[in-house]
Image (cartoon, one colour):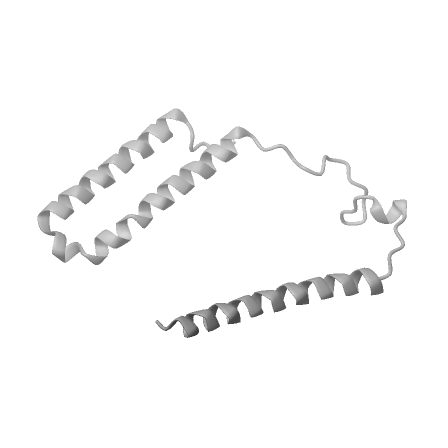
Amino acid sequence: MELATFGRDWFVILLMTGAAFLMGMTLLSLNLIMAPSKPTAIKSAPYESGMPGVVPVRPRYTPRFYVVAMLFVIFDIEAVFMFPWAVIFDQLGRYGFVEMLVFIGLLFVGYIYAWKKGALEWV
C-alpha cells in the first residue's frame, strides 16, 4: 500500500469522526438553547400509570436470578464452540467426533450438577 493512499484513508476516517462529534455536540447544544425547561416538584416526581409510586423504583433481585443468567451465558458460549466443529466435521474424522462427544459429556455433567444443586429452580 502506498504511503500517500494510507494517509488519505486515515484522513477520511478522522474527518468522519470529527463530523460525527461536531454534529452530536451541535444537536446537544441546540437542545439546551431551544428546549423549554421549567422544572417543578410535580414534574420531577415519579409517575406510573397515573398513580404515585408505592414500591421502590428498583426492585431487589435474588442472587438466584444472577446464577441462572450466568448459567445461560456459560451454556450459550459453549454452544458457540460447536459451530466451528460442525463446519470442519468432515476434516476431523473420528477423532473430532470423539472429542465433541467428550465436550458434550462435560457440558451434560455440568448441567446435571447445576440441576442437582437447585440452580435451575426459579423462585
